[in-house]
Image (cartoon, rainbow, N blue to C red; front, side, top):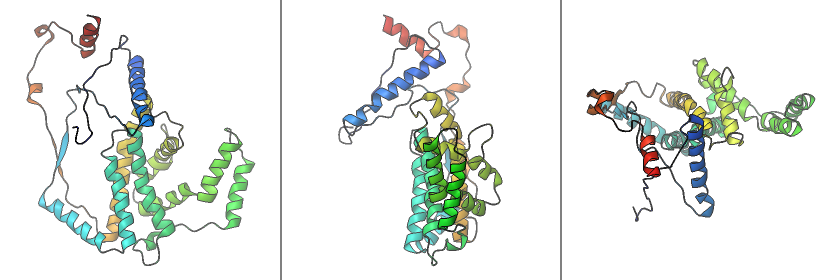
Amino acid sequence: MVEHARFIYDGWMPIADWSIENVRNSIKNLDKILSLFAIQERIWFTWEPKYFPSQQHPSSQKIELEHLNEITELNRMLDALNEEDSKVFYRSIAWLSQSLILPQPAARFLFCIVSIESLANYIEREAKEDSIFYKIRTSHRRTKEEREKCIDAYIKNICKKGRIHTIINAYNDCVLSLTNMLKRHLSKVMSDDPESLKLLFEKGEEDSLYSIRHKIAHGSLDILSDTERQRIADRIYEIERITRKYLNKISTIILKKPPFQHSMIKSMAIPMTEVISSHEGMYKGPTHMAEFYTYISET
């Protein structure tokens, strides 16, 4: 561990009040304290519970020869693209790949969004005529007159949050217009998947996925809050699934057929100890680890 500058610590935190809100506040305080090391030096921490609920089991995918052949073919086709197309596509995949490793929900969520945005922005704004992606671009550069009309519409309807918020929205929509570009692009590439587009851009009982992206990126969410992190974590599967669908759609354009046609078998390990039955009368000690630690601290 010394050679790799990685150290593992086994510790505990005394908590007298085990109400849900108090436990959340204690966890938030732990994260706040550990985050202070980042401004002292290049020091970072990740932590996880020492004991996990028994129903949470790690899963794995069984990779067969046909799956490797599909990856090989996709890799061969990507290497055959012009250098810029290949580099940008691999970069987009890398954002998704890294999101699977990160422990922080907000970072994972943003990495998935960036995976889509980086490739879409290249296709719509940077791809040249010799690019394999050029034929699917949809956007056009707004004229000066169109930009001014868009800005005028915002000025006439200043939002409730004030002029500053209105100006920021006008700049993002009328000058940069990333959101509108992305809507047009995804509506074309994923035209057969309206449900994913709805999750991304339409607000229902919950925020749209893209509005969550704005809240994280613009700092209006408290990522140290256990409640906020849980809300983001609950939506990660959705954005990850959509990102994977998008990249598969683009891969289909490159290969002229779906890249992955063989489904995988998912495996899950279940500890044998869970098969053994027991009842409360077999044990008279603490039934919650919190009770055990509280007892130790008091004695």
